[in-house]
Image 1 (cartoon, rainbow, N blue to C red):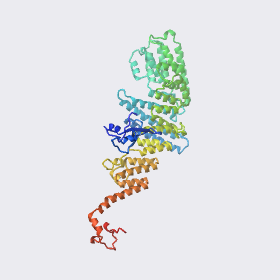
Image 2: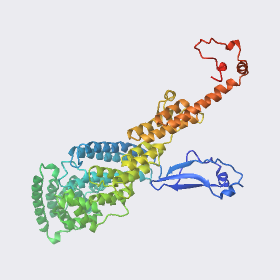
Image 3: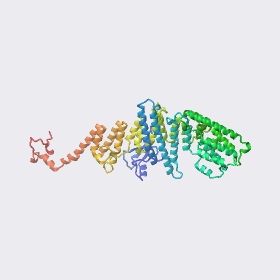
Image 4: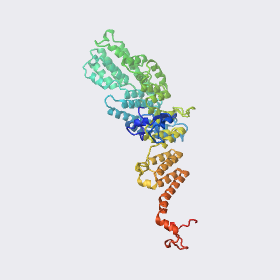
Length: 598
């Protein structure tokens, strides 16, 4: 937080010195329950000394309720607004299925609906990342980097915790590799284009690392292309033969999505491994003096590739270290080459083994979230996600609890569940922008009684002005001018009252109506004041409005009439023929002829 802008301004521009000389200063009190501040002017000197200061100022001072958070940018505000309907849909799905069954996780329909909504989050974040990447100025990639991090984290969460029902109990290696290739592209297309332009690409230092990594990542087309180059152009007949035999192996590498059953996949994988062993035997028969080509030890490079295909963990880790790959690449490749039947529930054990040798970067929050998710530690993932972006933590917590992967038990001290803590933290962040009050209330009201009580405070502080400085009704606040004349509610005030109805906040609705009525009363708009006081069911307040109406009638109608000379003469004589009336008449007597004793 750098600056808090107060509105309306506490003092006009150029009055700073006068403010200081008046013996006042600016003070602030931090709320013990949220991120708000109460900002106000207070005495900076002893009260006795104020009497000697000639400067006068109003005795009543405004108290400003401000947020200590930074106001979201326009792009961020759009992101918040467009993801909130997905959050609302989550709440509706959860509510519907909780009323029908005791467990969401066992309900395939509800889980499928929530998976689709989670994918909606992922798709929209990807669009934001692409948009921010195109818009970013030179050297300013902060927004794009944040959306990319959200994209990688939430998409990994969906892969691990919200799989398609048909893929829930199948090996996860290929899905992890697809996620890795989507978000962390290696090797680059530029490297391949550069190598393909050479007649003898194996003479380039980057050739074998490029070929090894394309095989590791499953890019068979690129791998086969350069193997064909070796089989056709390399001077060694051994290299030509090995490259020719390796190409069909890469093209026929079994993938579980191509099989109707896991059993068929396992059988095909065993047969494929037998062919890899045959290639190893051919490689071992190459004489020692033929394993060099004058530029590199091609045999060692081939041996590493075959070792990966054989599923040897030590070779995989050594190759990844040499390539500069991180722990995520090892974990993904583990499920593709080492343990082809690796399940989601078995993944944490493998991840722990890999992280023991190659830990994640503790300064990279995105990497820490990935590590926690892959390790099967969602609570730890939420902690890191909150430091990365409170939006991510709040929505991950919401999904986790709704699919029963996060305990909904309420903490005794805070009286909040873990989900509610993160949702309310996000809602407090939203309070930094008063324009987001509707979304803030929606998130708060999803967090039990405590959240609803906080939402009450937001609703009662929604900024709206019913009357312009010139005394006319602001139609943007209460609707059209016809609405104002008829006492109907519109504009911002109408939205506040409708929101109170939507979330069952009847006491707040009455209070908002009473506040609006008082505002109309101050401006002598008695019709609307009576209407809102009636809606607020504030009968005492309604009595005060009626008293004001009578006082206005007496002071503006009766008193001027009594002060009229002609009226005074008529009252004094009491026998003016003009004031005589038929005693049998049912018409009321003129005002001046009323008998004071009657």
